[in-house]
Length: 448
Ligand SMILES: [Fe+2]
Ligand SMILES: [Fe+2]
Image (cartoon, rainbow, N blue to C red; front, side):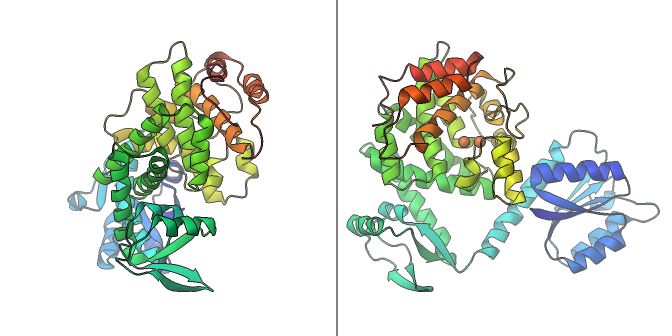
């Protein structure tokens, strides 16, 4: 969680802003009531990311004193000024809000944009000298775009020199040897990832691409688009990457008539849970909507869009596996990570607000994909007030988890799992989705 300072003598406003900054920006605000204590605090802490400050507290020109301190010390963080201040109205890093009102959206999104830039800079600063790259990515490269290192006895040693060829056999051997990752120098990371995503995008766009190749290349684009989207936000690059991942997920969904085969391909390319459950949810969701009496082709594509975006702000498999308030409470995640899980549906729906050509109704489905109308937490019971496709998506995800949870060498007991689904989802649109999945038993081969 990030840190900021709020300087304001109005207790209620301080509390309201602190709550919103924590929830929407993941920033904890430290409360101060005058500029002197804020300056002392800034001198003692070098991890402050933003300041919220009232224009005048009593006779003191609080904002100007604080601003001049920040400026003269080259601290380049954003400042939100509460109340008018003509002297600062042209400053790039200052937003003057004359009347705060009740709609905090404009200030939250201004701050989010400012913080995204800072976060990007921090990310580069914080990176260690070597950056890990998952082995499965190397099958997308014909040659090394930079030196590639292996970690041997705590030491990084060059394994492949820049420009040297990387053969499929070599990569297969690494996979066979259960090698998990190799490394590139942090300074080469961007070059490496750009090269990788360029190759992966070519594979996604080629007409001759085999399913196995597509599934692997889609994961690369899926991961990099999530990375750019969550670190930097919506920009030309992240939108292009996300579009190509979503379109490829639609291609995978449409081309699947055996879920068992799709799962096997995902397993063999060493997919993460986050990717696996998104692709499987897109595919089962697509087929489930086809079997709904009211399902339309626009909804089939919408559910693939949702499958890509619904957990976009989660970065670890352990976070994405949580699907109840109880599991969240009992998990061993840090408090910060728990907060991310609790608010992930809300944050994902916010993230796509400015996404171009969002399929109809998807922000709402993403917001409500754990049954809560406001996107915070998990609904303990079936909620009849959420949008129908949000209920359908919940049922689909639950069944996908049952499929993934079955060990590879065990038989998937369709009858037992479908009755579990019916007993859990026994009302309204939930029940319709469970019946639609049941109707796919003979057309969509689920497991061996
Ligand atoms: Fe999910
Ligand atoms: Fe989720």
